Length: 582
Picture (spheres, rainbow, N blue to C red):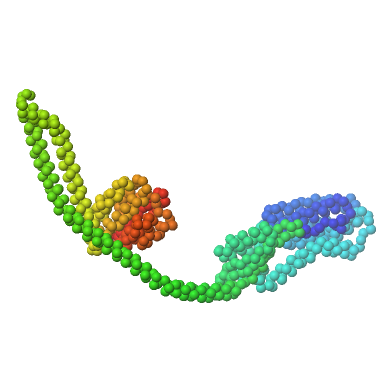
């Protein structure tokens, strides 16, 4: 809104003076606009300086006209004094603004309006009538004309209304504030200042924002910015932090202030303390939450009681199946132990006789070599020598001499391996043993590999990366069963020919681990949490019981350990068995 709207009523009758007056009104309106919307202090000071410069030029022009028009000496002196007073007042206000650049005093704007009223509309019109030698109006008529023109511009009413608004706002028990276009607070009513314990001299953007709870500050700032962009009122709730007092909840409405030209001039806000309402809401929410929690607990209790029998039946079924599997493994162990014992005796004869056969063979080879030397010493036409050489050639004695040691060695190697398998079977046959005893896990892994070698050799290359674990107290036969299940599953997960890696190691000082990794199909994410459930299997009907991993999981749990799984579909799986050393 302009501080003064130019119209022909403001003309004094001298074209050059009227043009200069119009220019002064333009500068004055620009100054009022800049102060209202909160322009940068430098821009406002520049406008004040422009006003001083132009009035100096204007006053000199008027004084030349008065001298040239033989204006009355007393009136001339009075007019010039008004010029000097104007310049002195504006310069003084300019110095105040330089010392305190954040604000230009309303006193300056009030003075400029008064000067326009008393000087241009009264003194300058009186001067123009004298210079133009027209019939001068009487002073009362000029005063009335001055009043009429100012009332038509409504500026005084506007200023009075703003003063009354601020006085009324100070009387209301509400949090009322006004900001400029840069969102800097330019007014907060008495209730706002007293409630938050802030002095008028401390009112600035930083202090204002710091009084808003940190959890709400960004949201409030964004709401104000959005209201400025949309030019729409916004309503919000947030917390304020009065000095030395508990936080208060505020319900606030902020509306944009617009100039007459539609330009955004800032926000005006009015907030009400709703702390009591919020406390009541919180108490009610707490009561509702308490009742809801009680109802939830009651429902959960009923659900637990309803499912308890089913759960116990399921646990009993699992225990029975584990027991059945354990009994089955124990029976297989007893059978294996009996077979191993029965095989072990004849295997001992074979191994012993092969050793004797090897010695006899060495003696026979020595005898054959001696016969060859004797035959070589006889004449070539000697009948016995020819018979020996013919026999040697027909029997291919050279090949027999080279092949017999290999045959005996291979037989010895087979016997040793058979003996090792029998020993591993005897170790495995103790699956039902529950006593803890020192056990070499890496030796157990080797024994397991030996037993299931036929399952693995056509499916994967087995790589061992042992860390040299020391024997520790456990039920070794049961852990061998775990390793066998994991190794067989790893082989079955490989479609063609892949790789199985076995690693061992220590974790801190209290745990050891055994890791079995394959390059197979991997386990889909949606079934990983089911693979240790009893009877869960991905194999076709009749190909698996779904108890191998379940029994392995229970054995590891009985050893106070855990099984960890990492799997990537299409790349393979890695099972890690972690066991406490103590």
